[in-house]
Amino acid sequence: MPRSTTPAGSDLLRVDDQLTEEERLVRDTVRSFAKDQIMPYIADWFEAGTLPRELVPELGKMGLLGMHLHGYGCAGMGPVAYGITCREMEAADSGLRSLVSVQGSLSMFPIWKYGSEDQKNEWLPRMAAGEAIGCFGLTEPDHGSDPSGMETRAILNGHDWVLSGTKMWITNGSIADIAVVWASTPDGIRGFLVPRGARGFTSRNIHKKMSLRASVTSELHFDEVRLPEDSVLPGVTGLKGPLSCLSEARFGIVWGVTGAARACFEAAADYARTREQFGKKIGGFQLTQSKLAWMLADLARAQLLALHLGRLKEAGTITPEQVSLGKMANVRAAIEIARQARTVLGANGVTLEYPVIRHANNLESVLTYEGTEEIHTLALGQAITGISAYR
Image (cartoon, rainbow, N blue to C red; front, side, top):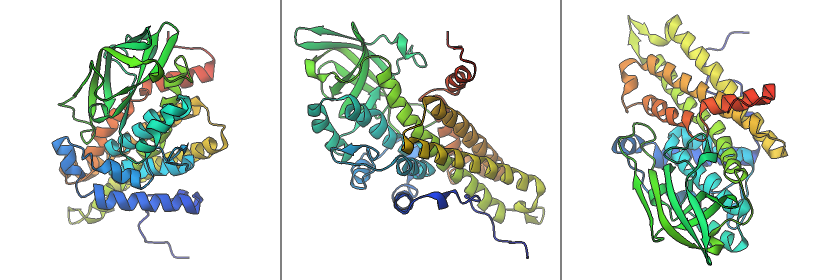
């Protein structure tokens, strides 16, 4: 048979053929939305360091906010459908995927999992509709990878909780209507719902960042904020609460970064087929083809890993160590693809006319947040040896 001369796409192994009809519909819907409503503007948003808040209700109308939760106005979709949404959003920009995953996995999930019925009924329908934005307050200026050392405190004074402390690097922080804040109490770490406008609660945006610029990143400060007794999440005490939320969000990252990687690979492949040097297309040079081949191999492995973890999550058998492996491996693969794509594009690779440098910069943040690469490496090391290297 004659060898095909049709250029290979970004899904050479036809991983998406394994998706259900419903999952393909989610893929096509989110991809179309990103193409029409995000891609024409994202370079300008990134350069200006802005995020149009009016996008949030649109995401709500599509059922993408808290889409993997059931009831309370949430779509009740499966883990793979949620992963696909993260993938297609991050193919546009990591900042937009962060908005979706922080809303659904870090803000809505703890209310859904650990909140009272009153808390669920008050917040989840509005958050699912995009009428209210949430944020997740765990990281502190001096306590990132080790949340057990958090200094934010809450004490019960009469019928009120009094909350004091500072949280740092909080996505959606200054635009959030409700903050899920984790604090140390005499009984252990607890989660609190802190509404916008609570007396003593202030926020400020973090500026001069060169990554996730199309995303709001904030510092939150709590100066003896008085909260009613029922503002605490009643269903969990201890680090299990915030860590379970992070595991939900990390699953979204496992999928999301494959979208960023795909966008970089496709930009490099398209450029190689059209850019001419030395009288021929650069895609005809062996070094360029070698780069593209390894980029595609890394992308294929990441796609397969994401789908496999998605099916494990559907079956209810996924473990935190498996999520750590996915986060660690897929983010590293995506960064390597972005960097190789930048070299294929040459000087054009550092301009916002192409998506590559934007994705590369964003992925540097994704490498660090929701568990640094080092922390996930040690989590896997402990799983392998049975010995903790944290302390």
